[in-house]
Amino acid sequence: MRLREHLRFGIRTAAFVGLTLGYWGCMEVEALLRRKRSLNDLVNKWLPRWSRAILRIYNLHIEAHGAYVEDGRIYPGCSPDGVGRIFVMNHRSSMDIPIVLRYFQAHVISRHDLASWPLIGRSARRVGTLFVDRSSRRSGASVLKEVARVLRVGEGVAMFPEGTAFAGDEVHEFRPGAFNAARRTGAQIVPVGIAYGDEAAYYRKEPFLTHIQRVGSLPQLRVALEIGEPLETGGRSSVEMKNLARECVQELVTRARARLDG
Image (cartoon, helix red, strand yellow):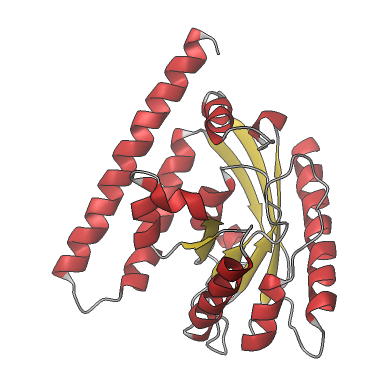
């Protein structure tokens, strides 16, 4: 990395830490002063504010299209019948997380080792992040039970059914977990497609620090986000649902790429 890139990354990292502590502190103060307000309400208030600030720090320019977001609103995590929604999307970058939290009312499912990271792990647990060890069947079963509980109380969940991050626009095979949870609860599946304007944003098979240094040193980054119509499970099996959702996400990714290239 050149000197300018090192400086950019260092300044952004310091700003990330400062903003995270600041917004977390504000949320905790409000939690103390307004004890009758639920933690989920506070999270839904402060997380979008935090994510908007983080995206500005990293100079992301996002073109978001679809219900709610085109009007500048957050996509509600709860459908009209009172059941939480499941947002499913392709996973490409560490920037996916603040983008999700910027546009959707949803708990995020994250890799289990993040829970032990200083600052990030503790704050993530506090705002309801669900952690899963994808190499452990027991961990996977446990988090799906928690997903079902969250959906039944009317809260949204964002999931990356590919299981890990990939480079490029091809949407890989989906795992069935999200769709099993949808069948159990009757939750809507909301397909989402994301595309990045610079290949440097993609997470490859590399140490996470290498990835975040590369992303954090970019002068700016264009992103396109496409949100599709909700899918109802109806009488479909989990396999049918995951295949349909994957087709929808692939179509949305293609549409997002066309916006970036247009």
